[in-house]
Length: 599
Image (cartoon, rainbow, N blue to C red; front, top):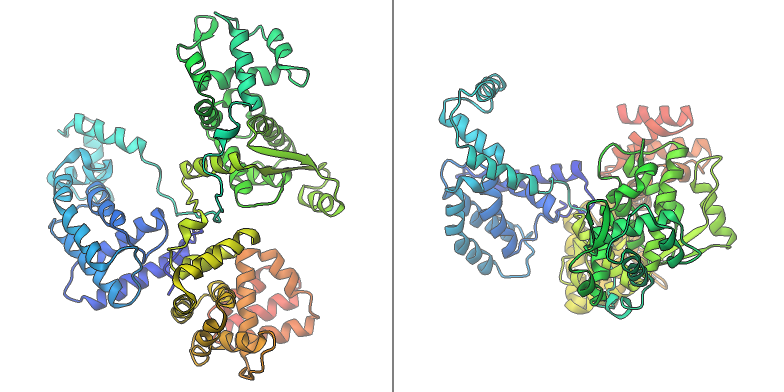
């Protein structure tokens, strides 16, 4: 069973959650807290997606914040008792992973219990849904009955229900500050060699010089529409568009303010300019707020105020995930997907915003841009844009200050953004999930460090235990790849898996395929099952690419392979056949897959 879900896989999470809740309920038949396990796991899915890894902070948060805000609990002592049972259940089933001991986790629950009870008794700690559910129960309405709930809220609207409006106002204020629940999303780890590298470059960065020019232009007060002198002061490469952007940016950062019809220096302008490292950081953080200067480009693309933040998020998530240069067109495509902007004119507008954004990030020395002349890169760029659209050949890469700043921004956007050092203590399941997306140069640091922290024998044992527990092709392939780095200990661990009903076929293929191997352990059917692991992993990554690879074989061979797939007990066989039945371009192949599914 998988217990880590870091890519927003809702369906797979829900299946694992239900399986865990059922196992917990079976192990504690006398308990009436099984429903709490589902709530706990739902929250953990949005927290970090690691259902079996519990820290003291996780437990305290659920007990003191989540339950009081969201849940009506008939007997308050039920929740701490449940958490003790849950920890023991995970320990008994050897699923529990924690940086602390089981005793420390139990101690954290005990220490947090008084704060939990206080929060349960304080209505301002509740969420609005719990406030209304409680009020309905108290007045004899049933929140679970749509008719009863509708009758209640009609009475509220008519002023016939007496409730504490001050408490509700405070609850709604808090609710408005809460980020929406969404699945945890992890970005690949980075090897963060430099700590706060902007400190070394901030004072001499072009953006600080531009802000000095803005303040010199403002003087003691200036009409913001009179920007010709500012354009001249900024230099030949600037124009009115950039001048307007810089004025808005300076205002958002606190350097200037509006006084009637004029812009004037803010009181903190000179002290802030004297602290370039702080100003650099404020400018980076405030960039998402200057959407007014992009109004013309965004008009008709996005209907809300989140368009610029989504473009920034798209750019940073793409750049952060790669250690090599990234095509500007890839950033544009990601932003268009987030904005659901599919028209060519929309793409051109987004591209214009991205270019202007990158120009300012270059001025911060956060990114470096160059125009590629490499034929293979140009060919890839041109194939990535819609027909009839000229591809921009700009390539972008994050510099160390940009990497550091992007990490902080992405964390604020809600992403999990681990460094290599962060990941080293985490269990093998998480490592196997992140390894495939991690750039090769970062893998070369992460994998040896993860193994070194445990020693080759313990690392191999942990990976082997993962292979026994989780029947997931992507994790299986990744774990076997990681075992390649553990030497003789890894070979011994895989040999012990040769008879395992889940990992056996892949383990035998791994043993025989090693360089210079003299082992002859492969059995009939192993090669097919192992190839199905590869197909399933490819399917997760890119359906179109999977179909293209599958279709390279002659038609009769594809039909024969479909029959062989249907005859296996591979856990992804049905998913593979379903994709072939629905998406294969050849009607004969799709029909064969559909027939195999139906048989």
